[in-house]
Length: 268
Image (cartoon, rainbow, N blue to C red; front, side, top):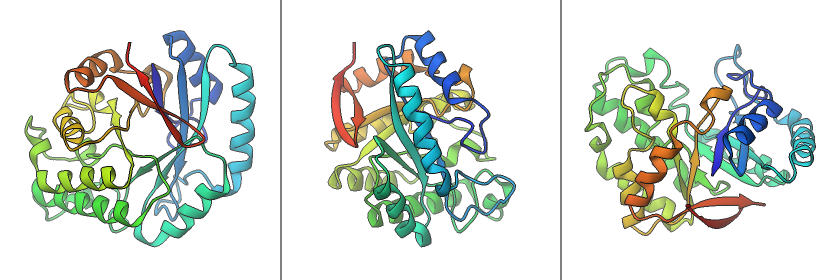
């Protein structure tokens, strides 16, 4: 139906053109796509600079052109994935408030300035300790920050963990993940279901379907579906399967956003 997490050449880790992403979405029969390129203020690796806020005017101009070009066959939403760190939350808020975004994903890609993508993050830590450190950072940041609509890939830590994947990894620090989803619900924020997990050895979405079900049980209502695609072949990857699982967990709709206002759309 909708892919609400797509990266293009405005992100340092993607070479996919915006128009290519949109054309692929139309080919797949999607109704909406949200372009959500990265803004990670104070990113530590200068070789991979995130989208500079100074280029946002051009970013919006290109998105506006695409909205017109694909009008009638695909709704193109102006989104962003904002990377949270404790010392940049004010700057993040300023950016989000300064531009007319349709949709904002808040993600945590760094803990104490280190990306869990890197092996150094796991040095001298057990699997449990590395997960706990990440989840504590997520919880602290979403308690302190409000300018977002959904939390992206809650268990990002599992994507790059060097420890062997286990089908019970989603139970690690379950009290912390419960605290995270309860905080989201209290703040009226949503949870992203990120299907990039199907490209991981765990072969499960992010977060795990059990965590998604707990979000619903606690009263959560806002869910979006995103592939985290950086290449055309990954757009909407795994959507058919995860939509069936979402319905089993009790959700009968997905959430779309326009001007950051949620709308609940029934799953066919």
